[in-house]
Image (cartoon, rainbow over all chains, first blue to last red; front, side):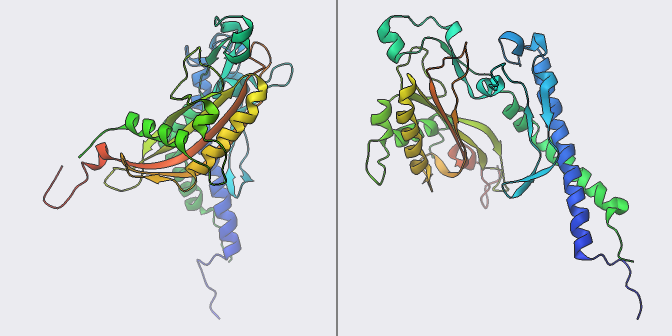
Length: 160
Length: 159
């Protein structure tokens, strides 16, 4: 019987597609990670106090990007930071989602105010989410480009 | 055709959330928060518990004549002292019910899709206020705003 050419078993196709998908995810994530780091290094875009301010480079050097992994039924790359306070608290999380800062407050210290009102001001500087939103198209294009390149480069092994 | 936009939609969503009566009974969000649910951010001297609602991450999506927007609705609930976490968690529970399968066509068709995040934040160490209870919830939405759909192409009516 003539040997079939150009035939790739499904398992091999699946493996090749997974490799291409992982490479695409890394390419897409690199764009977002770079944008996050730039934001922390640039004036006025990083957090605003202590060693988390842009002037200290406090967070930019702690940005992490995971390897592609399975989570909640999809393949994903996680971008984050391992910056923690000495107590182990994630200050960047408090900045991203907002927090009340008692050191920045002038809302009164009498008993009734302390009971029901803020003694500090609400502060928030979002960095990660806007970086993802603004680079969504670029990241998507990088993903598509990389996957296509991987599949065209003969990454599909032949059964022959 | 009304073409009112984002502020009108946000105001309508806030009014809806405040008034939504949970099916199993219990107080509304309006009663729980004393009506203090603001757009975008709360006044600096706001009494607790209170909350804010805003749209984030909006972008054009799909091929519906370019008229569809997708993004996130962010609800932030704050309580102080920490025992108010019971109230703010309850309010977030009611908001989850209110936005479950919610669709409105008052300012253009708006569908609230999945709850994508519900986070109870641990009070941060000093100088963060350790007495603040903080719940953060985010939904995805799709919206065909009137101010965009009025430009949708119809026969004999090129934009």
